[in-house]
Image (cartoon, rainbow, N blue to C red; front, side):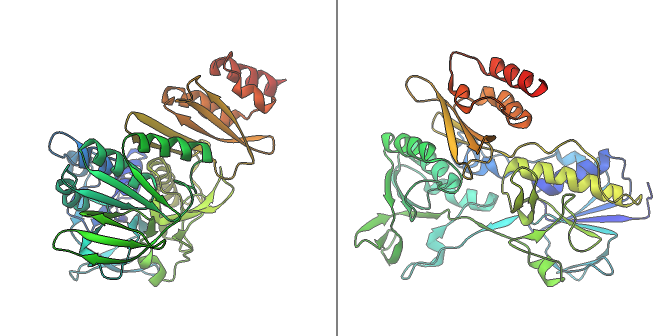
Length: 422
């Protein structure tokens, strides 16, 4: 591999770190520069709504790689610095401090930012969000038993914060404009299961309403709702989704559609620019449509794909060869419940439940026509490898057979494998 070339990685997050690691392990020995606006080394985001807020000990940043990795693998760090512009023609990366880095390849892994919420009568600084370490540090001391917490949005982040705040003695209200929780990501059964779990622990819900205005006191805020009622909050946290940080690419003339549009190898419309993680949108092989998938595993997979593709491009190969991309995977921990989602759920046309007698745990399999496309695992995480194999191999037998709890998943997988081979 040539040593006279340089890859500049913009955005010091999980995807950035994994891509750098992939390139080095693939034999790339050229220069690598990592640029990040935060002063922290690349860290993972999922712990922010878990250990960062509610851990009993002091918060330790969940770094993707040991800090020694960057020195050992000759990665130049430019942390606490902002990229102002990139030039896909020359490969120039311009930093706000006047520094220009000449690059042969560029990876944009700038992630996404929290959608902001504006409430008439409420100062913006009273509406908090959770997207980075500094957000977690600001929010943690506010989540104690003296405070009334109002969460705007009943998504995964909001519900994880709700569970932690309840455990610390807070009074928690979730305001969700839609008719059920996490409507775009989970089935109605799981929405109901989560709502019941939270309600049993003391969380109050307001569905189908929005906040129309607020009235501030010295420390508390009264929020007026669209149905004419109100709720009082000491702490307001907005969790209403995220927007891709794709402005650099857009300004450089790179094709963007709800993120930076990339091909199967995470390569953008520019020949020297790749994108990976929350900022990238691509045709996902499992969903079969163009989408921006925000998850820990998606960032891991895309970083690996992008890293191998960048290395391959230096030797004239258009695509990096690799194993088949697995079904998407996402998880959430709330109270003692562990929810895992594999594949497609909300595009399903029918489902088969495989639940315990008390209905507290089990797996829901989802179908489009006769095709098994996804599964929701409710506190059955140990079965994820078997469920993943079922999704990858396909299910040629009658759908209802998956609900037969008299057969183990190992037996069902063996039956499926035999039917496919026949």
